[in-house]
Amino acid sequence: MFFPALLLGLTGSLHCVGMCAPLTFAFMQGDKFMQKLFFYQLGRILMYAILGMGVGFIGQALFFSNWQSYAAFLLGGTLILSGLFSFNLDKITNKISALKLISKKITPLIGNYLFDKKPYKLFFAGLLNGLLPCGLVYFALLGAVAAGTSLEGGVFMTGFGIGTLPLLLTSLFLSKNLSKKINTKSILFQKLKLIYPYAFIMMGIWFFGMGIMSWQSGVANCH
Image (cartoon, rainbow, N blue to C red; front, top):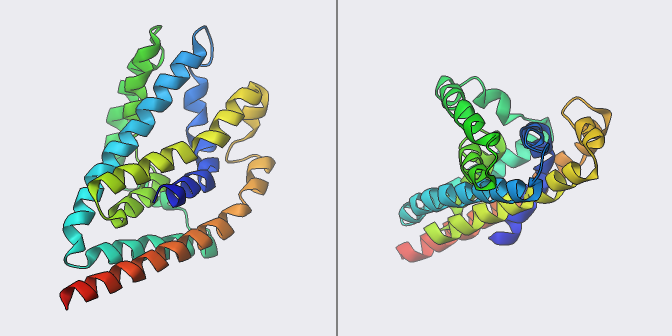
């Protein structure tokens, strides 16, 4: 489960550059940047792992009623539709009042840690960042549900978090100017987004296959 999660994170990392990089730029100034970046990303990925373990436990409970396979079908179908019709889950999540309230409550808390001079405080900013409403993270959590166990759910979300790092870190280290050009409105971003549909469709097919295997396993256990 680690590799497909890694691929999902890597595929969706353009989204992270557009949405999360500006937040990371906030503490690029000053000294101890590498330490701050480490603690921040560690907190973010750890929160993903914790969420993955939680939903993985739910998936484990649902396995015996065959709902686990439905989670894989749902994720696979959503990814395929996203690839075919450029479906943007963020536009929907941004309209949900409860999620908007969560974002409103968490964002100021992140700010409390973001500009602290002590690098380890960025760990808590990363933890809170992992709780911010994000359509891509919800995609991944569906995969964690389908993973089968709490441990595998945690591994899945850890792989997803690590997969988001390469492009995000590359954009940070190349230069501020280049990084600022990689945003949701830039020509470069739009060109890179061309790989999205194909990658999402391939990932969707993979999860559909996983759902079929899970469903067949559930049917076999019933007999």
